[in-house]
Every structure is written in structure tokens, then in C-alpha cells.
Image 1 (cartoon, rainbow, N blue to C red):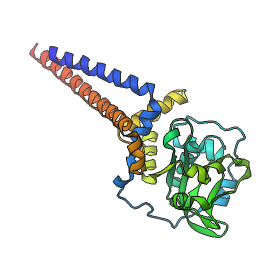
Image 2: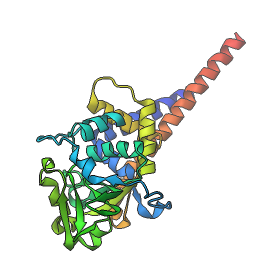
Image 3: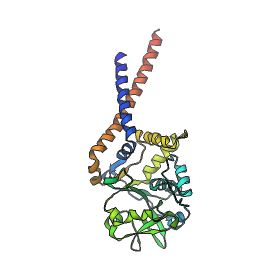
Image 4: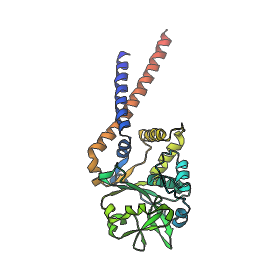
Amino acid sequence: MKTLRVVFFVTFALLIFCSIIVLMEPNRFQKFNSLTSSRQFNNQRFENINNLLSVQHTLQTIPYQEKRYYLYAVSPEEKFEQTIVGGNGDCSNFSFGGGYHFIRNNIYFELVHFLPPQRLFSGGGHVAVRVPYQHNGLEGVGVVDLAGGGVPMVGASIADIDDLTDQKDRISFNLVNERAGDFYRTYYTEEYLDQVYLGFTPASDVIRYFNFIEIVYLSFGSPKLEKMLYDGLALLFGQYYHIYVDDGFLEQFETQILLFKSLLLTIRICLSVLVGLLLAEIYWLFKERDRA
């Protein structure tokens, strides 16, 4: 029993130590544990492109707010209500809020992540969506910027994710809803696209993440703490979404990725050990009671 208690206190101390590091760098912990090599994605990118999004209708109905701010909303439905219905939030909020809308309407999609290595944690990134859509007589799979209220184009054609890399000198931004403003146009300039890697999150990952949140979510009145807690739980139980990206991007953060993924693994092991020790303690208590 004495040995078990020593193991318990050592494991508990290690868990606290790892948790402190995570709380000091929650954004890095979240991001680096979601980054995955695109070589590990073996499924088809788009399985159903028959159900098309009407870009004109969708973007025109969003009441974009003049001053928008980041939303800590955890509930998928609340994200949708505050972004697509309410017109608030940043690019990530809009993309996940739109994801909820696409899931409900059986529209296949991906999240598209613009990842600048030099400004990954200083507000330099961006998130859009990739969907099969129709707009102004055009139909196809392409990028839609829900936060920016428009779509990138290659000349008069729909711009898909590969075009943002291969045809970036020809990309223009077609603003569909003028209330969104012109700021997001800058993400589709050749100057910006030269600085970023493009990653993607498939719909299946978003669905898994949303399903987990809807099962465990219980509001306690502090959106920021709720965001940290429930995203942390999603990571812990392997229900968080992946961002699949080129190995060239991952190599630039190799040490940090290893550190934060090791932290997650250590936390999982510590919790498993503590649960095992607790069960052992209960077993010994019942055994002692039976002897008595």
C-alpha cells in the first residue's frame, strides 16, 4: 500500500506539472496537437458534391456586424446562431458556425486553414471553407470565405484550394455581401499567399468534434473557461479535429510539436495510472473489510 501511495503522489505531481505548462500555453497545446501530416489522410477528400451551396443566398443573409470579436462559444448550435445568424465572430468562428449549417443541410465541406509559419500565434492566420457551390451560373468545388462575405476566383472561374497555391498570381476576391467589408480581401493577395501553407480539416473530423461537445457540454457561465475545458477534454479523449498540412510546415515546428504531443500523452498516462490506483485502493478497502 505504501508503494502505491508513493506512485500516486509522484504521478499526481507530474500531472500537475504538465497541466501548468498547458495552462501557460493553451493555444500552442491545442494547435500543435491538432497538426497532422497530410500524408496520413487516406480517405477521399470529397465523397458527395451533388448537394450544392447557394453562395449568393447564404452570404447575403448574414447580417455582418461592423465591429466583430472572437467568440468563445462552445456549443455548435450557439456558434451557428452567433455567426451565420448573428453576423459576429472571427474567421474561425464563422467557419465552424458554417460547418454546423452544412452538416444540418447535408453539404459536404472542409475547413481550409491558412498557416503562416512566422505569425502562427500572432493573428496572422485565417480559416475559410471548401464546399461544392453554385454562384452566378458557375458550379464546382471551391473556397468560400464566410467571414469575408465572398469567394476567391481565378479569372472568371471558381478558385479551389490548389489554385490558391498554383494560381495565386491570378486570384481575385469577389465580394458578395458588402456589409462584410474589404479586410478579408487581403488574404487572397499573392503577397499573403506566398507566406502561408494551406491545411485542411475534413467534415468527418468536425462532425466527430461537434458530436463529442454536444454529449459533454454543460454551461457554467464562463465562455472562455468553457472553451479551454471542453476543447481540452476533446483533445484528451481523441475527439478534437485534425489540421492536415504539408510536412514542410510541420518540420519548422518539429521540436514544439513533439513537446506538446508528449505533454498530451503524459497527461493521458498519468490519468490512467491515477484511475488504476484509485481502483486498486477501492479493491484493498473492500478486501480489508471482508477480512474484518
